[in-house]
Length: 66
Image 1 (cartoon, rainbow, N blue to C red):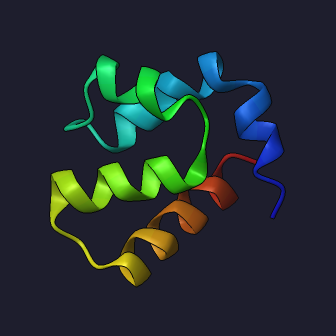
Image 2 (cartoon, rainbow, N blue to C red):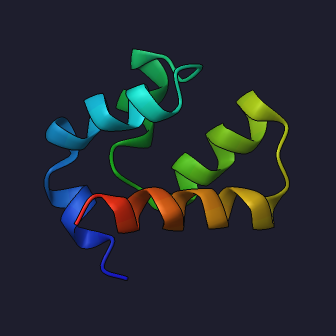
Image 3 (spheres, rainbow, N blue to C red):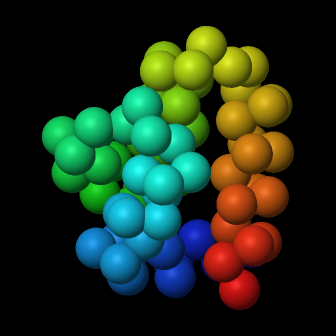
């Protein structure tokens, strides 16, 4: 998986991420700034999910963006 695509186009992906994970605020998304590890941490914090579940959810979301 090439997460660089998301990092490079973060402004475009922010809206799609907010659609999928509506509990993330604009401030959260600005702080994440395309970094996957930051996104994983915020999703764990906001949704109370395990690290493995968050990784799977992000992988599934990313796969659907192609």
